[in-house]
Image 1 (spheres, rainbow, N blue to C red):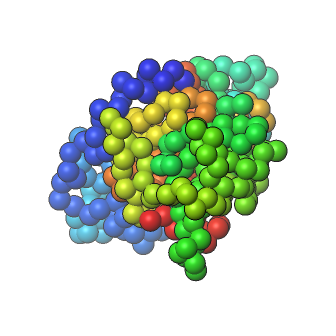
Image 2 (cartoon, rainbow, N blue to C red):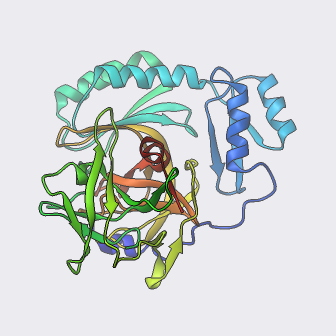
Length: 341
């Protein structure tokens, strides 16, 4: 994805306007959680009203949402039904160049097939979605769905002997705050090179783990040079940096920002969550967030954030649609027993 496209978005703020009165995204999610999978299909941000919407499937759930101060919206399908469709796709298909998941505002499972998907596979997907009516939809997209890795702040250049990627977040062990490390993409650390350096060749640390199994894409580099300061910051606009102080899950339709050594800083909208993506090289990732932010090769592992909150790590993208795919950061932090700071 051309870095010029990313720069055109660089002036967007991390939030368009202050969110109007009403429950926060986390509070709205708790409301949806209390309703349960058979009474809601999730939440999203109404960008025009700057209020969170809780989808509901019945009048009793709608009344409960209204009483909480959030906006209810009646939909046809609940989370249990939509998730079961996605689970069937996950179990039955591994077609390179595809992506699928629940589109909360659309209240349906959307299957996307890029330009590399052949007619035979396309026909199989059409046959799959047909019985579900309006609960599932197949969309043909342009471009190619691919990982963004090319052959110290978040977003800075890092490299080992075989790959160049982007620095994600500086993290520390919850049980030992003096133990600092670097989160990046797992397909970056899952390479033959073990030692990592900055763009000027300064050594920063060594690979201590990667998780590219079971649909994940995150890895850990031990910060191991006493002469390097590992700030808990990420690169932002105009050479400034943004301090990161905590982590959380993203919300559909909120504005988030990304940083990477190739495409630099840019902001856009979280458009989907919990997506399964089948890259053109055969790797499959699940549970991904999708943002409308242009990214390029070499941006892999770079941070996705909103103000001082860490959201995700870049896994891949589609240069034609300008969509980028992110590993939610909380899963990686939990796996390693780490926290951002």
